[in-house]
Amino acid sequence: MVRSQVSWTLLALSAILLTPAMVVSPALADPAETAWQALLRENPNLDDATLGPLERAVLEVLTPEQHAAFIDGADPASLVLASSETLADFLERFATKGAVAEGLVYYPLPRCTALETWSATLGKMAANETRDFIVRGEATDLSDQGGSATGCGVPVAAEALMVNFRVSDHGSSTGQLRVYASDQSAGYPLINYQADTGLITTNASALDLCLAAACTSDFRVWTRNAEAHVRMDVLGYFAPLGTGGLNTSGTTTTADLTISGLDCSGNANGGTLTTDADGNVQCSDDDDGEQDLFATVDAPSGTDPVADAATDTLTLVEGGIVTITGDAATDTVTISADEVDGSISNELQNLFATVTGDAGSTTADAQADTLSVVGSGTVSTAVVGDTLTITGAGDGLGGHTATQNLDLSTFKLVGSGGSDGLSVAADGTVTIDGALVADGLNLDMGALQQQPGDPTLAGSLGLGGNPRSVSVSGRYAYVVSSGSGDLKIIDVSDPSTPSLAGSIVTGNPRSVFVSGRYAYVVGTGSGDLKIIDVTDPSAPSLGGSVGCGGSRVAVVLS
Image (cartoon, rainbow, N blue to C red; front, side, top):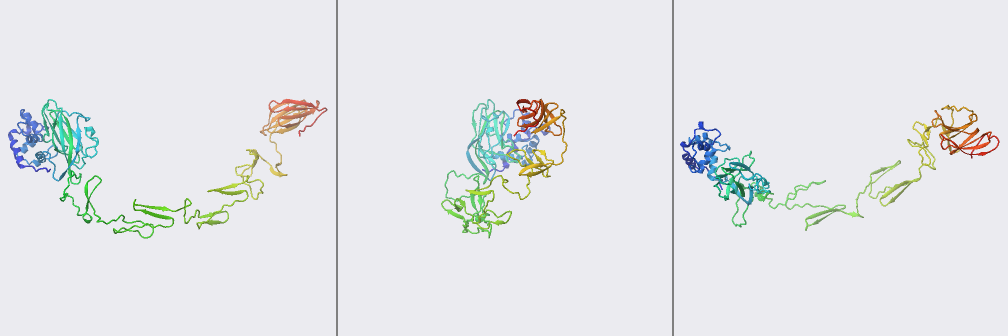
């Protein structure tokens, strides 16, 4: 289908029918009016019976001023309409009634509904309403306008459509359905519908689509004068060669097939026809049977192989523990490494480079090299499976003779797992059970003892009553006095401030000895041994006594 050139006979006919007697002076017209509106205002009886469809269409796109210029012989190409096209373009499009431009190819599609106001969100079109619609984009969702949710298969490159339109439910009014590209003027009526005429259908009408870059829709529908429900079914589209599919409808031909405009002579070996992912026919290079499956192989050493002939072969070479197996049936190549006892046999199994000890070192320079771990003294080694265990026997100190200084750092020498014991700080300060040792230490027959120094008074507490004897156990000093005739228990946990914890009357005591929870007291006068329970130092009590006769001045418990 080819868009016809404007017939000057048609233009001349238009000029004759649009006589000067029917021209409204631009000075008397409203600038917003069309020539048709101005004429209708001046001639109320003017209707479609008075004018033909071409004349009516021209009047509806011209202003009164453009209409007067046209009657005076102005070139239609110089009259620019509100749609930005010229009157010459408009007359050409009207004359061909929607025929598409030269050079376009028609591609049929399965019938597909692109718009239907019965089911669309916007509903029925009102009288004199204009709506914009889209259709391009092969998978564009058209459900908002009542069309297919998966699109109608119209590519973006399409410039025109072949469609069927249906109009119904237009009530008692007479109207027109006008459909046109969004960048064009309204043009001629596609359907004239009378009052209560029911369903009206057009058959295979061509519809231009918007081609301007600024278009936001593909075409417009105008229900002039009367409301109506509208449906449009797409039958196919027009697009430049190569933007659609080739459909022979199952026809077989023995004649040559010529694709106009497709020249592959610039491709290698004259080119060959292929299709892209969308099914479009295109030119590609013809390799003329030269099976160059690779260009260059990047090798880690040596020279890089280059495929420069159809018979070139890329050879994979086995080596060492690597084996290569090909399978022509499955077109596969398997590269594998030999295994020995379930593990890779590495020809250079150097698991360590150099091991250095306190004395000497060794280097793994052969696959059979063995690293041996040897125990000594209290250290022993054992290998079970893949595990090497190194064990140190004992506590590492008992039964050994020191040959160098013993550095305890923040640790202590303790016995029986206790938390207290001998602690030697970095500056040489010695404490026992947290208490500072002011004097020296020595070993006496294997026992660690404090070396006495010059004594100093740490603290004191007045007791009165002629104290006779003292025994110390733990944090308490136990003192008996003949003057006060009692046993006093003194808390000496802080030597600088001793304090009286408790006391008990014992007669005329002369000596005291403490062991465990009891203090043993003897004295003159009664001549007996008193056993005092000092479990609670603040409230000592008589546990028992035994007569010894005479005066006793000392007691020792063994």
